[in-house]
Image: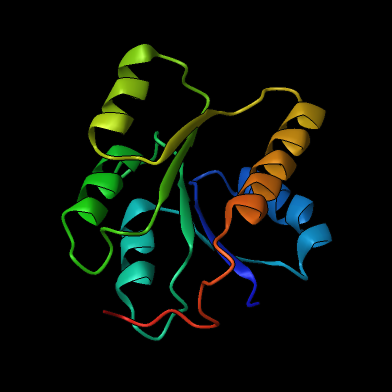
Length: 144
């Protein structure tokens, strides 16, 4: 089975580096790509030369395009609409959570503030994705 491709979008380089470091221990089953902004994420996702991610993890508060704007753009693009999107934010504001689900996010995770809890959160997320992944997923995604 091919590795699970997770694309992280966050304007905080430290958070992206930390996430990559956490996922190094899962390198045999997880492929990670990253974008530092909403526009860069959409460019990556729309570029047919890039591997299509199995899931996109989006921060909400980013300059340029917010995570909500990226989510809305993805869900209105026929080529991207079926990619699951998980919002990962420090915000636990009920309005943010409601907006994410209104825009068809697959899930909403509140970033843990404590380093060890964040590590556990990312590892639990990867474990969840691995356990719920359909066993019949193809070795390579094709555009339908």
